[in-house]
Image 1 (cartoon, rainbow over the protein chains, first blue to last red):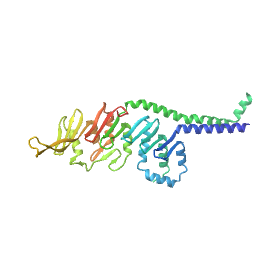
Image 2: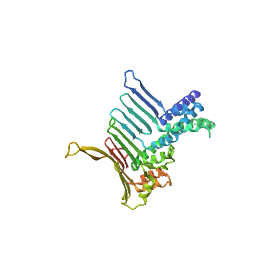
Image 3: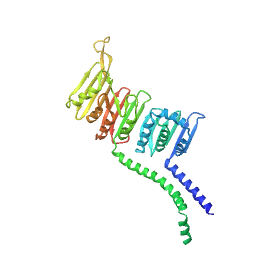
Image 4: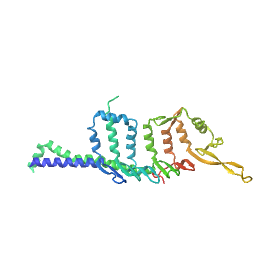
Length: 145
Length: 228
């Protein structure tokens, strides 16, 4: 009976920890709607905590490739992600014409990119903390030069 | 009761483990809550932040409008991270700064050291350029001229050329910002120092205004995080 109780506590606590961690990290949201006939409709909601975790399983050689391609803008993106968190619910860039509308804004502590056009609508929301975590992890796993 | 207390004292490790497991979510939640507190604090303090706004309206191509809103504090921190071409560590190299025959650095130095109201004027068939210093601001006006032929009243065969204003650029920069720009030394402009000086500048200021037939550009500074 005691063993069962311990197991129940363990499971409940693990679920709680996982739930709180997911809540803390937020969710990634990707919505793509193509307007053409038979066009794709992609709607993905995923816990942001999954991305830094998944990075642990990426081989170092692959991460090195990513780092080589991103070394120029990665420090910039990391600082920008940190700074953007100080400005919740703000529109930073907005481009619109007769047909298309592009908006880059923060919604709470997430960065949101909205593209609305005659061909397709794309909405991407990513927690800024996750961006910072991912860039930090990629940089940390590079061999010291 | 005694049995319970005995069990508790006998198994401190188990109790510590259960306690730690139960408190773990609270510990994990704490940073999230404190982050929210930070967000609230910064959101309320952001009203005193200085924002740089850029608006470009292109009437020629599908009526495109671009709006950019950047907090100066953020720009100050992001700019030093950009190291590309002439831009490095928040400074821009201008060693071959002869832009259309105008030595930018020398011109800025001249304006900085000159008395208020003194100005430089360049007049040509294509452009008029005026650089002045007024009430703590450096003012630059550039007018691009065009020529169109119009039929004269006297003779239908003869036509006379009339010049018209093709585009107009007005720049108004606080002198403190100009001085900060030049603080980097020879052949460099310190953009971060200029941003800092711009942050310290009080009041709403229109920095750049460009008007032409097909587009309008406006760059201004205020304390609002929205363009309009």
